[in-house]
Length: 456
Image (cartoon, rainbow, N blue to C red; front, side, top):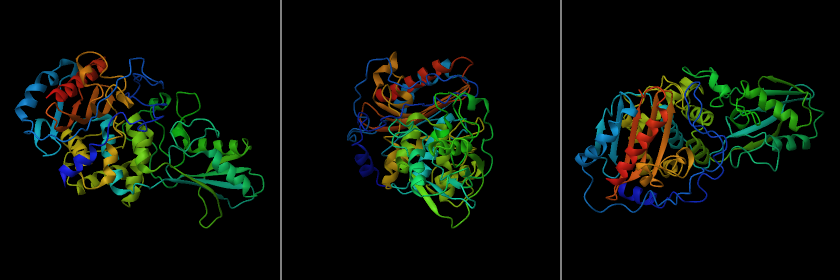
């Protein structure tokens, strides 16, 4: 890997680029655990003063590399913060040299929460083309008045009427499919069949709690859905997102009373309409910035499809692990059961999380560089927009790009920060025994860890 050239190429990415993350804060998730209320699920700007962020990836340093002793000295206090609980694993790497600057249980398998999405993102971007898109089709049925909605795994397909905003910027619309079907000159539609056969296996992952469907954090994972299972202005997501998509199509066709049921398209039937998603890197950006659990799961299944594995939770987890293993990343202790990190049964190491970030920045594969602008920015963008704004961590507002993770009793942060010496550092910290009722304090403690790294 050509680390110097790759890092220099990434240096052009700054956190204040206007196009990055536009419109992505609608319906975002804060990764709350089962039955736990989100810290802030409402869309809209933070009430804090706008942070004007400096570049996160400035020009590469020319001075001596940061020493492990200095990093250990800087982080010993913050990592011992009692708010983080009884077990804290952490890794810090020099991105350019690969030097391990901190190893605190780097090979210990911990429960990573939503930092799992980094594994999903890196694996997906490595097995897909930058312009790859996901296609949803409507084909003719086998009986008079029947059409079939064939899902392609695009969770962003929207039921929003034409001319109104969609939860995901640039998403395709059911309304577009309906308009094309009307132009096909078919008899009146009386029956909508929904074909979600692209995905296999259970729709809920091991370790998921159905209460989180009502909380709006997950939905059953099906190959056909609209707005990732959202239901208008309701917080609860649909328990039958595939049928909800079929009903949305029927309504858009002006036949809301049409029969909607599950089934399969017959091969060779006439194609009536199709729409495509945004390119995969854009979907990855939407997934990481908002920590979107449902989007993470449908994207993880695309890894399985690319690898010829079953498009199920188990197939996606195995495919993701296999792809990362081919990259010679340290997957030895990894045990995945989903692609979003919502399950308490997931296990990753901070060594792997930090290595994922280093690989995304330094690889010769430019497709993986899309991970960097997709990361939330401290005090500014995504799930970090209301953190790093007060207290001692505020000095690092706008200087940290990192993926957050939060479940009941677990908080994690994995990202990139430029130290005071100019060196780009990849870091990952997971505290998976956070005291009860101490979640927000634990997040503040992790923010201080990243701020101390920025000062190194």
